[in-house]
View 1 (cartoon, rainbow, N blue to C red):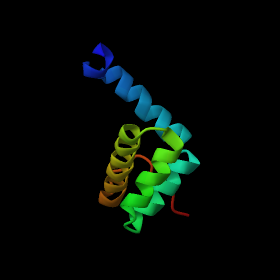
View 2: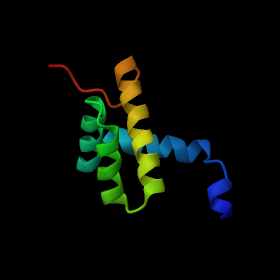
View 3: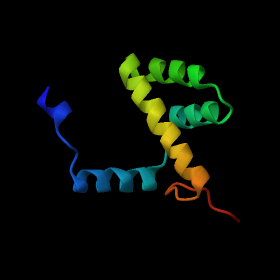
Amino acid sequence: MFCLLTKTSKRTLFIRSLIREVAGFAPYEKRITELLKVGKDKRALKVAKRKLGTHKRAKRKREEMSSVLRKMRSGGGATTEKKK
């Protein structure tokens, strides 16, 4: 239980963001973002719950994906698509 209450260190956050930038999103995460784009929040939650197992994890993942979407829309996202 202690691990849930501790704050994630700067180094860990940096490493996770770097991995996310290099590896990108998993296919189910891409599907969740597509569902969130068209306003299907409840369906996105169901997809996340199916893949992750619990309601709590699914809610956290949906929130994470919606924040990533917000960052991409504002133009400050690290995972923006390359223009040709």
